[in-house]
Length: 97
Image 1: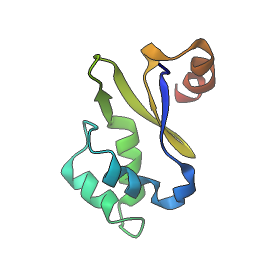
Image 2: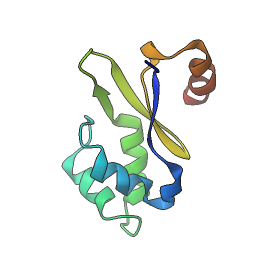
Image 3: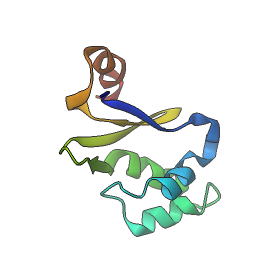
Image 4: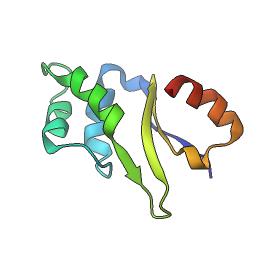
């Protein structure tokens, strides 16, 4: 199993956060208010600031106890450092920290 999973493609453009709000409801540390703002789309005054906060705060613990976080580089990825290969760590963690 890879420690990097693409969850939303960049082809959604400015609507990536809105797609996240509608499709990724199993993530933790996201308030219902934040989901509501993201669901309203890029015309909402706080859309991009809220998305930045969600990217930095959201996490998910899978059934095996692995903790996943979000990473955006065009596409949005779910990343679990414990499951990452050495190559994935080189490709992603250098940019994250």
